[in-house]
Amino acid sequence: MSQAAIMRMTEADFIARFGFLFEHSPWVVERAASRRPFDDLYEELMQVVREATPSERLALIRSHPELAGKAAIDRTLTAESTAEQASAGLDRLTSQEYDRLHSLNTAYRDRFGFPFVICVRLTDKQGILSAMESRLQNDINTELDTAITEVGKIVRLRLDEVLVK
Image (cartoon, rainbow, N blue to C red; front, side):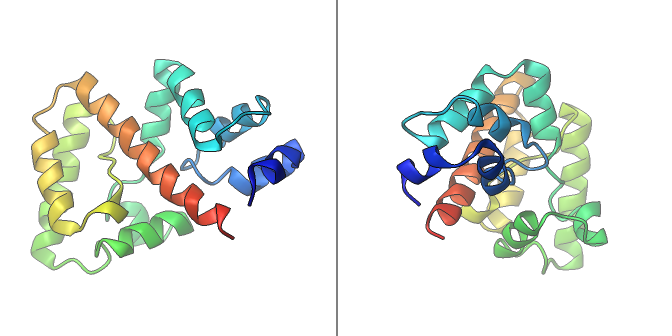
């Protein structure tokens, strides 16, 4: 899809096409829609996130599911999250791996007040577990920034897929 085609879309079509990019947070795409024309869709979306209030950014992070958590077990993940978690092998954990991941999820949420966010498509289950252990040592501000950076990676990959369709 060309940049020109994106700019010609109605606001409703734009939101319908790209609203899924941010997990349960279509407000980012809605705000970007009203800013057209712009040169780079991804950069504009991330600018919306950068300009959001701290509470909006926190809500964006909190909209992400825990990895291999309740939503995965209940099969209530978005289609995108289901595929992404499966790509990292999180749908095929041994009981020991699941227990370790669940323990790290709990420790992370208790420490920071939001779920661990990582672009699972750029790693594997060992990389995820290692990152969780490592990032538990971060301070809250570092982890908020890291989570938003990871959201950006997730969005970049999702956007790249939809633009080639």
